[in-house]
Image (tube, rainbow, N blue to C red; front, side):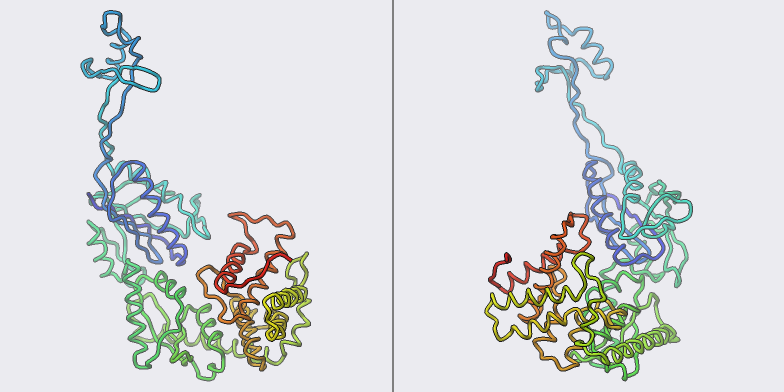
Length: 499
């Protein structure tokens, strides 16, 4: 086995693009090598925001294989005395096969004359030169772009491609970019080029030039720095696996810093604070016993922030965002949910299905039916009230600024106005679950309101005759249907979906 190393160096890519590209590279290379009978081992992928990397151990050549060479039928190959005919002699001469190696071969079409011949496999470097350009140009990403006069569509412009096999350059081109024996370190910290001889030298030299190519190693560095920064506060980050995964792929060398913001913004709920931090600047909220502290953790792609400029810049930007959020919070609370409810008639849910006022009426009707079927007499009033108010937060400034807080903001405003816990909690959780992995609403009322909302969307859209296919689901009905099934099964609800 010989070492194979491929690095595609690009402009900065989003985290989702990196993961998509690495998955396709791994799957595609395994598929092509298997199809061409090249043995491989330890095929692994690595990535940063600027590079897609594949490392593997590959056999030096294809496996040697036997090929059956079929000549003329037996009755044509020999005369009545059993001697070779001119036809057979011509075949042997054309294929450069000695007569003594020919034998009668049984085939589905009858008896023929032929022989087995061992075919030497092509060298692996030739196969790589053939398959790599095709594989790289076949990669697809959530959003793709062209640059210069290139016809290639890729996540971001490709600067150079490092490709070595057994220390030897694998020569090919991708849209004018020729493969090379060099790469470079961190774009800002250590951009010097270098030519590694093997995988170990590649990783070692990158590390010296401020690049940690292994995402798993970067994650450990980030988590360790998080713990160190928060140790004096005896605090922890507000959990967010999606944001942590983004951090891992956003940098080549992670540096975690602790920032602070004025305590007056602690008037805002944790949901608002954490969302403002995440969506604006990819910051982590800092909590102690589930309560927000006036701190945050940020990430920079650098070895250090000795002058504190990165921290100060993030603090300045965050304060402006939190000031806006506090303004929206105070302004929204000046108008009650009941008053806002009248304006749902101004928002179209779907042209044929009407406004959100129409949807709210349907939700109230459906949830009333469910309460009756499930014999929830005492809960019915709260369920109907929650259904009527569930979509009111779409009219708030906070949701316009932070659309991901739909539902949660409505629940928080309802709590602020003094609505009972079963009402505001149901509103707060009614968008759950949004995937099969998501948790269910924690209350029965929340589950029923979520179920009602999803059933209304599914029945309404399908009733319009909208076609749903594997590649076309504009209303996210598959996700909604999964949520319906998950709630009914997990909560063991017993009622008929027919009415």
